[in-house]
Length: 182
Image (cartoon, rainbow, N blue to C red; front, side, top):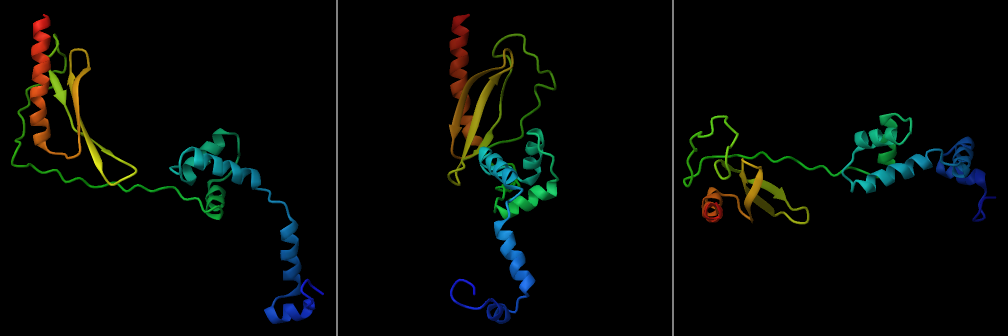
């Protein structure tokens, strides 16, 4: 009799299972999980890195922590634990010349050394994706080549050449103040 008041042979016949299969699975329930330490370590690494690590990086981290394990086993255990790395797709950017700006002339020509402050200044626009939303921020610092100091920077929600053009007078005000100090 099995719990519930039914005979085992009738239950196995109804479920179309062999008696050996039933006892095999019954024995597996009492078995200690030999990979439990490894599973907890995988979960710790996964949460430490906020879900950014996949099985390859977790495998390397486990090896750094002293575990000898095959990467395929790490992959199987992660699948069993339902852990999957967050995949961030790269966007293809299509840059085209807009009406506002023209291609600038190469005035520097590979001569990146400045002999005095404010002689050569550079700018670039960097895009930052905000994780909590779909918005992006664009950062444009102006860098003085003499001492590699950021003179001034601006942060804006849209990326356009007008942003840099409007921003240049701010740098020129800084330059005029600098000249007064000399």
